[in-house]
Length: 192
Image (cartoon, rainbow, N blue to C red):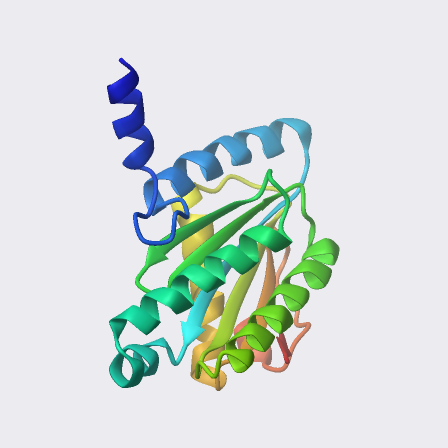
């Protein structure tokens, strides 16, 4: 029984970075959505992509790429609460689940993360920046996968606009324009 529990735990962890994997993230996000709906509390999901990561692997080697990924995970974990969950969902893509964080708090937390991660990359001379899509849930019925997909779309919006920035949206809000591009709907973009 102990061995089975250990295997089940390992099946939910990224072996390189020690971050949660997509499976663990979706389980936690589903539970958090249920809790947030019941108690009418907000929550935020931040989709983080490493701009220029392929260049690290190509120019400095995969061992350097692995060091970058582990450094990013370590830094984020040291800056967030124990109740927050960081998951690696792709090669250089991460999702940060922030329970009970509304859009105002996200506008404080995420830019600080963005700045500190950028400082870390410059200090190590790693040519990496960060595009982050931030989706805050306040109300409405949505699946864990859909919330992740919406944060992912926000992040891709940034990549198409030039990278190294943060885009915000609130799930369940009527469409309001708060950013650079009225076509983008309820997206507010903040550069660094």
